[in-house]
Length: 326
Image (cartoon, rainbow, N blue to C red; front, side, top):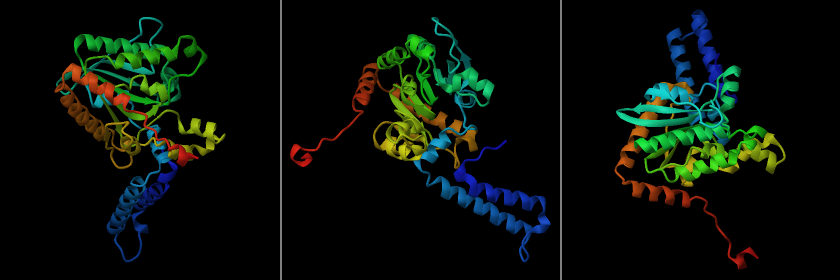
């Protein structure tokens, strides 16, 4: 079953018209052949798709980032990486299925890959907790990162979560501490680290595996301190103002790059990553290999200093002079 977003309706209508024409070729317009009319509609579909997807609003990109057919971490582990061997458990409480990780191969390089994983249907979403990790998920990620550092393997993280799980159980098991420890430890690992926001990058849940030498983002992903709905509920007292909040939060890939919060934007096929997952996976692979090649040229000390300086430079602000403010 295909899933269409509201702003894709003009494309859907043209596609239906084309399908109807192909089913009943004798109904084509007078004075023009079936092949010519079909070609005209196909051209119109391509033009309409290009027009729509070259002028997306921030809220529309958020909708694309949440598209149910968008490739998830496990999809990329099959298409971008090879020889993935999953590791389980935090050795303290349980195995959180919202975070997956293990050894893999990227090209001819051995790496440790860790990512948040959502589900595509109800049963899997319950298993994956809708991609929102518990404390044990972040502790599992930290265990795997420490293992990678011990063996000198680069760490690659794939981020796709609305945020860490905010339930009572997570609070009882100290989720804030689990994320905080990850932030501290990721700043200190002396192996190359690359983080990629592949869909949603929500709050501390994303940052818990997001401290890296290079932070990349897919073209239609977003990265934010809070979801547009959460921001709208706080500032406008109405979650229906999510589109306005998305505009104000500056959470799209292009805006994040302008603000210096991400290092590189990974392009997606026209219409989004779900339109051609295989092509997206290959593009991701090329960008990861390029970043690792650059990072391997640096010494451990240089990488650590650049990583520290990178995150210290976040959070610019401006102050008006007193006379002007008055």
